[in-house]
Image 1 (cartoon, rainbow, N blue to C red):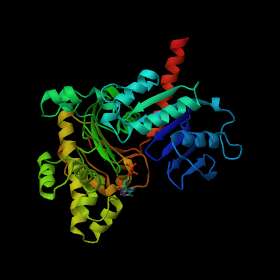
Image 2: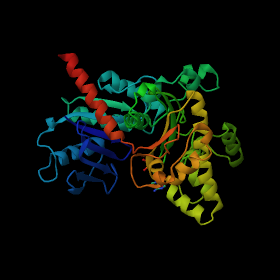
Image 3: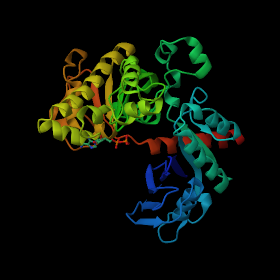
Amino acid sequence: MNILVLNCGSSSVKYQFINPDTHKVLAQGAVERIGMSGAVLRNKRHDGDEIAISGEILDHAIAIDYILAVLLSKNHGVIKEKREIKAVGHRVVHGGETFTRSVLIDNDVVKGIRDNIELAPLHNPHNLRGITACLNHLPDTPQVAVFDTAFHQKMPAHAYLYGIPYSLYRRYKIRRYGFHGTSHRYITERAALLMEKPLDSLKLITCHLGNGCSMAAIDGGVSIDTTMGFTPLEGLLMGTRSGDMDPSVILYIMAKEELGSSEANALLNKHSGLMGISGVSSDMRDVMEEAQEGNKQAAAAFNIFCYRIKKYIGAYSAALNGLDAIIFTGGIGENSPEVREKSLSGLSYLGVHIDESLNTSTEKEKSITTPDSSVSVYVIPTNEELMIALDTMTIVQEEEKAVV
Ligand code: ADP
């Protein structure tokens, strides 16, 4: 069974064509600059064949035409007929309170995603465009929606409610939702496999550290708290986002600098975080390099980044009433021994003991703790596309069984 996994952004569609049984990626690529000049599809086949196709790719429907054409292409493709695409799995950013798990897409689901546009105006409309295009291009192929927020929907009310009038939650659904759910779920399940322990017996803290960063407390496979909130702005310091701060700060800055709400939004989302503090870059590699060369602001950015992670490890081990493992993923989590070491320093009281040579080894998926560490620490490369493909396969198989 081969699954097409789609991730539709405002001007791009990323895709992978995966066999979820073997985990093999048969083809992958992206259409970029949709609706702009210089639009291009780049495809890479499993055997290394690569192709770039430029064209007038005016919208998501045309982008998906291009993707289907390359998958079916005689010279660069991997299938002969459309029906070899058994199902399509769509990444959808916001499922609100409507969706607590991945679902087979029908008219009600499309409406549900549309109803949640207000919560993710920059993402859900593009996700919907991809879904609509696929429903038109592949009307007989099942489509599944996999939500970034769904994994966190079992959080208890004391973790998701904010200290503002309850009527605002009722009226506008203002609450913590959390994001990166597919990644947190993938590394949670993978950690249980590596630990050879049943998931429902484990207390885990997962750290997804990429350009956006979030952590989650996972009790028995259920996310009971997470650092991102109503939007992906809350919590950890990120590439360009501030993370946690006193909300009055922004009101004060708005008054002092005479900023409107969209400028304030840009300040917090695009000009803060590693970028804002270091004044150098939003990229952790640049920040670390500058810090090494004696740039104090860059050093401060690195230290704040790691300190927040450590602070949340403390908070979440309390929320979990114990801890079996901490898992790192994402571009920074997977590749930076320095960030792991700094964030985990001084946690011996919790039973975290890092083995320096394991931490710095080039192995991609690994445990980095000493044998006497009562809390294990793992580095696990995330694979959201595989998780989406696996969910899609499971749901399609459940449906087929239900029909029989
Ligand atoms: P996205 O969230 O956009 O998917 P990634 O997960 O690719 O992003 O993470 C990007 C971040 O990973 C950047 O800050 C980049 O500097 C960081 N990163 C990648 N490789 C390394 C490395 N070797 N050391 C430190 N940071 C790294």
